Length: 299
Image 1 (spheres, rainbow, N blue to C red):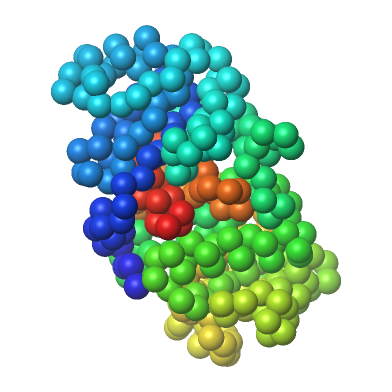
Image 2: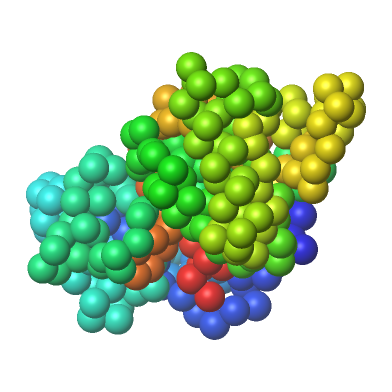
């Protein structure tokens, strides 16, 4: 099982060459990530966006890579860049999409277009992987689904499990988080968590262990779980944390970066190919690590 991002990069380098399609590539951090991936022999990139900006950036900052990438010029039209990125996937010019300057909503709109998009009929969800000192941990969904209900949360779990299995964890432990570990009718997320655990018991959510509701401490600390008398395959040993809503996931994810200073990567699962929606504020390393995660998930 892959324990950290260094191991992930090593694994991805062993796979066949992959091409990342960067939608609205006129972004310094996205272009830096493309150069890093090229230098690391991790992936090639197809740059879709403002060719003048892209060419000038490479000429100024990485002159040795001025001719290293194919560029499709869409000017500063972000919507066009997103639709061209989706088209490139259909034309088999790439294996996954990375968001550049475009808003997440704009890229997802292109991905979900009923006529030309990359729909599969599955729920899309963002899976965040963070490099805890002990292992790679996962959290979902802090980026796509606002207030998911039970069936959507089941799909969110399935998407996260696929990523975990791509990282070598054949049967990950999934904690469905709430503020408390007891079912409380006044807290709907606790009822949903208990239903998801029962669905797992009945094999409706396969290839993992699911328990909930669990408070964060009971999910990640065996000592905390023991103190509260909680015994399960998941309590204190969780690999995947399922948050109740997008606010919880967004705050948690940003705290990991800005307070814990953990290295992180994102991948959206559920479309025909992985979609990478790292924030425009994320640095080049985060986007490069997201490329690696997306390639692993696509393999």
